[in-house]
Amino acid sequence: MSTIDLPTVERAADALFAADAPHGVSLALVVMQAGTVVFERYGQQPDTVFGPGGPVTADTTLVSWSMAKSITHAAVGILVGEGRLQLDAPATVPEWQGTPKAAITLQHLLNMRPGLEFVEDYVDDSVSHCLEMLYGAGTHDMAAYAAGLPLLHEPGSCWNYSSGTTNIISRIIGDAVCPAGGDRRGTMEAFLRTRLFEPAGMHSAIPKFDDAGTFVGSSYVYATARDFARFGDLYRNDGVAADGTRVLPAGWAAHAATFTAHDTDTGFAYGAQWWLWPDFAGSFACHGYEGQYTVVLPDRELVVVHLGKSPSAQRPIVNGRLRDIFRAAE
Image (cartoon, rainbow, N blue to C red; front, side, top):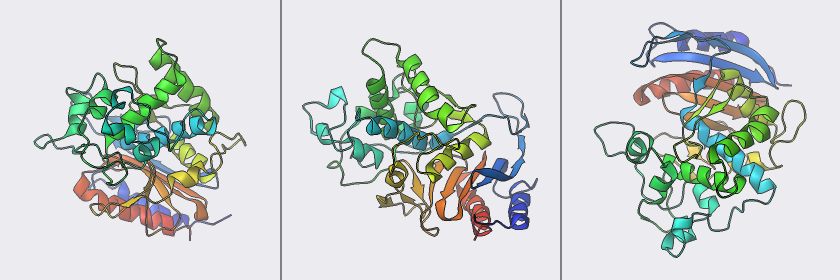
């Protein structure tokens, strides 16, 4: 087993949780090595327009934001392993039949390469299909909103990070697990609970759904920091949970970590609904808005979770502190 320099981790945590930290607010930090939590620290939820804040503990469920995309990847993997979904077949989106969009495969969607228009922006005064989907005209049926946007590029030819793409995948998962006319939300919730969350030990996980009964796989899973770490550890162990249960098909973690694009805006690379840290070979990660991270470093037997509230301009500060933690396990 690899060793980790805990004083280095402690110094990084001190910087992340400092009252005047320049990156914003850190709410939770969990460092898991070889399946065991070796360090954790929790902060204070700030007051918001939705209500007062309060102390964060090991039992506090926090929002994933886009880390949910990687959970969606896991749900796809279960169905691919059973032969219920095919990666290279045309995506099962009824409204695309008989149109050029019919050439879009599930693999294109997983790699963020469907060619569909989608502006992933979180600023109110900018054009944002993401905000329109989550909070505007698309909120009742997010997959239908995203699937109806124009095809701008030949499928597979252009990488474009898109929450809408993930919600199309979520609807495909729902169609595969729920019979026509059935309780889509209930069936999908049971599928996630019994096939993924419970076997992986993620007992706190709460997925959210839109009015059409589709899991909002782009953005909304609530869980404790420890449970996000357990999810990362599931991928570190190639889909095998801590108790030895195989949850995902063999090789599905490698599928997540297979390079598909480099994002020049962030400096990160992309696989399949997972990000890659190029300066740490073999690493792959769940990323979410405001500095949510679950980073998996298999060669160091390490999973690191950070949850917080950091503006995008200050995110590199958080990334630097996390890199300090990664290097502590060299």
